[in-house]
Image (tube, rainbow, N blue to C red; front, side, top):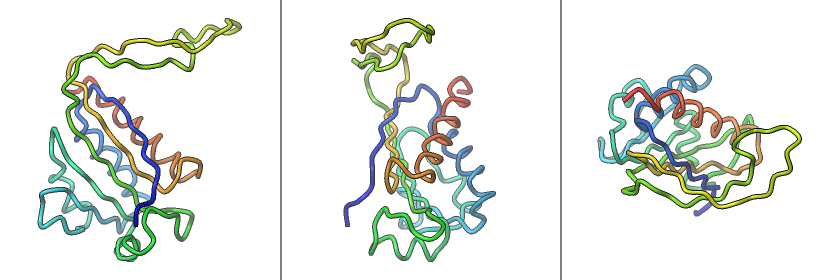
Length: 162
């Protein structure tokens, strides 16, 4: 079943380190969290403490469920909000191979209060960019927004800790 909402981020830091930090934080709320890491143990779901060291640098796919019950229902319901308005999610990442990316600024990057702003094109220039795709049940629920915020925070805090 194909469901879910993709959010694509560009990161300049160690994505694997950021993912570990985000999932460490979530593990406090989801103590029975299970994770499947691409290329590890036939990609079966294992408890987070056992999977933590398996998150690869560079390129990877990490599938996350609150517990084994959520993971078992994933195939039937896809990326859907379940009990407690929570659902499974995935983080897929790889190096971008580009050091410059054309973007469109929809918000004033200078954060000037009272300044009239209209969207305009820009070029993001950085070495070591990675593409990070977060797949959540939706874009609007508090759960999905919280997961996105946690990933952004973890990637930002790891950006200069190479």
